[in-house]
Length: 311
Ligand code: NDP
Ligand code: OXD
Image (tube, rainbow, N blue to C red):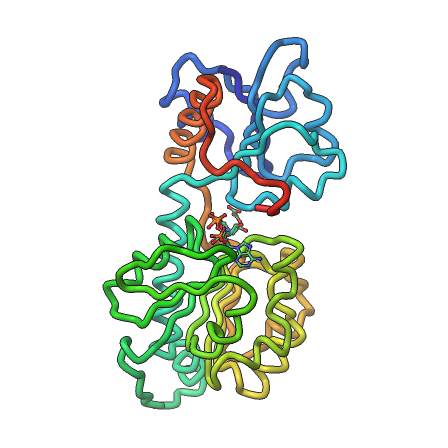
């Protein structure tokens, strides 16, 4: 089993050791020491590889994305079309996102962005938070991460709803919506909107001004999916008008967010630098080795990218 590894700005040894712990016979090659395609079959494990790099290695049997998102791959116009792409879906990633969403939902429910603003002026501003059962938390994108977030949130007693592309079976503790025809109903009840959608043709700018205004007065938005989902100019407008009370944005259309972007000055907006869930080498190594074995046994791997759906 040979792995061609590409990741900027992170100690590769941690990944090498985690992969070797899963399979001591594995051969770990870190970029630029990928060798020659003539060396025989290999699997790529990459994050934001240089455009054009992967096409030079026709020996790659499958490309493992180090993240759940694949936009860092599909933006390469020379990405090999017939090589399967496997998206990350390990337990560490799910746990990380579930923690981030639980933290953020609680912060917005308990009005922490407002309280932190008041602290700046030493203002003793007591506020009243509604009971969790009276707060609807709408989870946009009910895939691996949306479900993990829902499971973490269930014990708090929120009124949970989800929205996804395809219908979901009935489930205890959460009501499901699906399809564009239900989006307005889903949004109009969601006091706290948790966004965990991938970036696809259909999701870009899905939350434009009209849809943001469908959220109830005083709603909060948390985006941990991809930045292209939300029209940021519109968000600024509806936050300034007070229709949207507060937000947490972990992802942006262009990262890092420009230092002169007006959103840095938006009160009650929490900006985090794409850290909601960072792939953890130990659980990811187990996931990668497990799925290489599946591929080698002719079985279907987990989380294979469907290029038609875009995720
Ligand atoms: P999944 O593929 O498991 O789930 C995606 C969900 O989005 C599914 O429920 C899917 O619907 C839904 N969806 C996709 N397109 C549409 C659409 N047009 N309309 C309605 N629903 C749609 O992905 P993950 O949960 O693993 O990851 C979600 C995203 O989170 C990733 O794509 C990535 O961009 C982002 N991410 C961000 C991280 C961060 O640190 N900020 C870390 C990791 C991931 P259906 O169920 O019907 O298929
Ligand atoms: C991911 C990410 O896609 O980190 O996993 O955003």
